[in-house]
Amino acid sequence: MPVQPITRIIDGESFFLQPFQGYVKNVLRLGAMRAGLELPPLNDVGGEPLAAFVAQGRWVVTCDQGGCKNRQMVWLAAPLYMCSNCWNEATGGQWRPVEVPFNRHWIETLLMVRPDMENRNWLPEETERDLERENAEHGII
Image 1: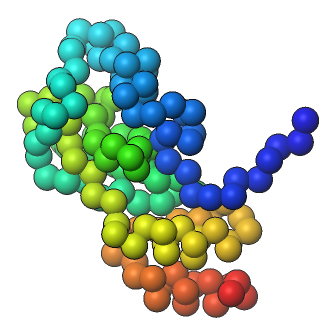
Image 2: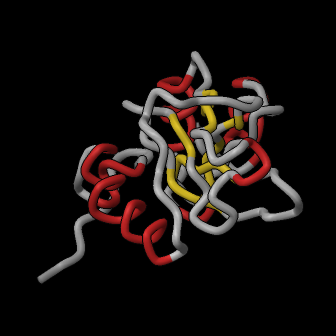
């Protein structure tokens, strides 16, 4: 069976094929239990927001606590983060908010014209103009 090309920038829901609440219940909660922890309710949110970015066509976020640097997918419909490595210990185990850019759809549009998934990358410090310039430099319009 041929592999279907990915036609959009994907988030956790499209990658794991389940909504955030299902991922929390079916994946994160089990990991926390193995670590001897219990996840807080989804409304127990604290700490500074983490910035979402695009890495190889996927919306992700990186843990910034104590040098952890664990990277996980972002659920755009529920932008919350619980590190599956340090379990957000530095914020008392609370969920962290995730900042998704207001111009997300335009960023995705500019990235999707890039034929190679490995080149579909965006960082929060990059502007739409930066992406347009990069595309033009590589002959992508």
